[in-house]
Image (cartoon, rainbow over all chains, first blue to last red; front, side, top):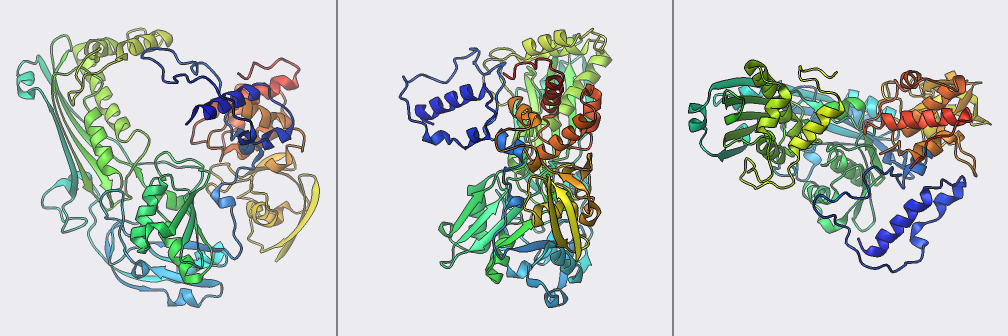
Length: 469
Length: 162
């Protein structure tokens, strides 16, 4: 961002403080304003300096069109001749695909093309491990897997055509629990690959020594559930090819560069021939970080020579998009009589679902943050992520942090209660301080855990007995 | 095919659609009014809210033919060429919308409420928005905006937007 840019934005904000009633105001493009040279000033606040943004009400430049209903999201777009695609979902957690018969669907009036896993040039992708098929090939790994896709002149016909597709499965025993998946005897979800596909250990100090010096040792296990992002706008993409063999894809995708790489791989087309246009997004929260319908519509558009659009239904959002990792979290904590934590061991088992997606980053962040914001000298944290035959998990706000927070704070409350110490007091006694070392050995600066806790307690009238007065 | 004639944002409009067409699809696909959104198609999210004969309605749950002969107002019917509806203005001033996808539905629910009850309590506003989901979680600012519009209607000075 250059300084002219910044200046333009500042003046735009000032203008918006006096709300004009002329609708024409929004049509005045800021880019047309003359560039006013301004003295170069640093916009980076010094440590502990209050930035002028705090306590200010900000308006958004896109708010006007949002309120008028004029923002064009992808589902508001139509291209002449556009077809509508629907994807048939497996509905079975683990199976071998014996036969996919699309002939009846293809005979339906209004159905223009059908594709299956066999039509995908390279049927695997993923942000790190390439373990996810575009449409199921020989195997179904979770019930939300697509097995075939139809392009038809209306959405209604496409939906009806899905009913005409018959798939013969040989059901296999699904792995549905992360702890079962962890076991060595459990058959691999993606055999011959092992079920554990990510692992991390963090060690600090000597936990055995810490436990030996402890007054009491507490152990507890916590579990969180799968969570869907539920963006109000469902996943959607539209693809069209030009005469020179380039494909343009409009999509709700957030990470378009990564998406381009995945599309180049799955379609076997050089990246230079793929153009992705990210549309105004109606909620992402981490759930729109990788391709879903994009290669499917690209294949159908190529087969039909027409633009093809595919919008997830709400049920598909739940079964065929990523979700938040459920984690099984085992904590063991040694404390002094006064509640000071001397040692903590943690084991996390993240449930990855059928595919890796963003599991590796989530695993790392959950593991690093699992000891909590506490000054603990002796830590051993170990995290695994495993496959199950369930909806895949991936990025979601916080990347593993909310799950471990639930565990270490619940654990803290249990310890406080057992030692008869006020829950606030036990946190103050253990909280990270200026200069404390993090679990990974980083010296921390600008540490305000205590101040934050004390101010929060004061603001909502913490009375010390576990209830706000 | 079924013929539907309705008053849409003040104009009489007619369309011929398959009988299973919902009011939402009629608005979006026949009349090109894409302000009402399809979020769930089962009446859970409220992104498709419009006003039919003064009542807020999930247009994904109403058939187009059921709107025959009725008065329908959509988000596109609120502003004039020269003036925003006070709800649109205050939603903008208060920063009530983030991604904006739920916005048109929320504003229509709020309009239906204020048309019937110009001085709602906070609880009444919350009840009126109970059928509208927002996942960016901007409910407080939406409620602030609706309260400010209600205050304006009573001639009370609204709190500064900034």
